[in-house]
Image (cartoon, rainbow, N blue to C red):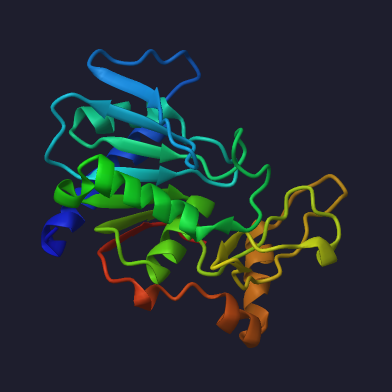
Length: 238
């Protein structure tokens, strides 16, 4: 797909999801008429297909969630589907058939989802965009740095460095990479552990401390210069 065309598509997708996420409430969210949500029947992928009959031109969006795991909430993307973008919502951990924690998730798992979207869902002709928020944005950037089979990347508030899973980890010796490639853990920056005592958590300070060791930064930095497709990055100021 033409790179000049994919960037405005990525921008439109991103702005839509950002607005919907801000206004969505806790009320039940019925599936709009014309949209179908189905569990993908696949031996190795845990995914929802959120689509609408007639969507045949705009790209498929492979969507990965953040540190909460499971599926990105289906109802957050109904309007996006209404605009012509079908969604393959991929659960990387936290649901049956996937790891319990965000620990050494294979990048090849995402590759399988991209391959499926291309070969079985018409992604070869429509295009495939990879999108994720937070840790999902980290995954999207890391993936596109090593694999060149997506037509665009949208990353919401991703990190610059690969960091480990820190939830329910109380000993630095137990820290493990969140991702793997070729069966090996992806090098990561050793994130400070959460304080055990109650009180404010200085996330800015925790992340800033990762940059103190240049050797750690060199090994854990996501090599975004290797990405060959358009990238849309959305992030706030520190």
